[in-house]
Each structure stands twice: as structure tokens, then as C-alpha cells.
Length: 134
Image (cartoon, rainbow, N blue to C red; front, side):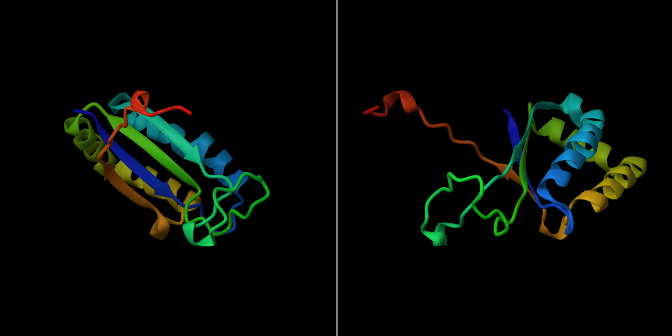
């Protein structure tokens, strides 16, 4: 059974969203692919743009100039594994001292690690073919 893990990531203070994205794409994502890519069946990075909290009551922003400063994350990364054994293998590889050092050193230059989270996900897909499309 596939296993999905979501990483909610925040850039290090002092970095612009553009600098963060460039550094993540050129560095950390490549490191992850090199170490773990063989274990992933999907790897997706969702960079967040303009955002509002639900409390703002202004709906989803459609204007690219809307404030992004309040959103707690810069990117939501999705990792999909074919099964729990693949996830366990990623954790084993990440714990190898040289790999742990490489990952930690790279993360320290890029992320506000205290504000980054990882979570297992239970995915529920809705059958939209049964929805009345008015």
C-alpha cells in the first residue's frame, strides 16, 4: 500500500522566496534525489504563493501581489513510497552518519528547522464523476 509523507517547510530568515526556491531546487532536492530517489514513486514540491488565513475572511487570493508574509510555510513537499518498507529504508539511509551530516548541514543553510514539519498522510480520494457539474 502506498505511503505519503508531507513536509511543510519554512525558509531560513533573511532569504527571499526566490532565493529559497533556487537554493532548494539546485541543492537540497538534488541531494534528496541522490540519496532517496530510488525509494520514491512520486516527488512533488508545491511552492506556496499568495495566501490568506481563514480568519482573514477574504477568500483565496487571486492577486499575485497579495501578502505572503503571514503564511507559515514556503513549500509543501510530497513524498510517496510504494510501501512502509521503502519509508523505513529512507530513514535508515538518512541515519548513516555521513548522510545525516550532509542533510543537516544543507538544512541549516536553507530551512528554519524549528518551523519545519513532516507528517504521514492518509489520502482519501473523492470520486468527482458523481458530482453534479452545473
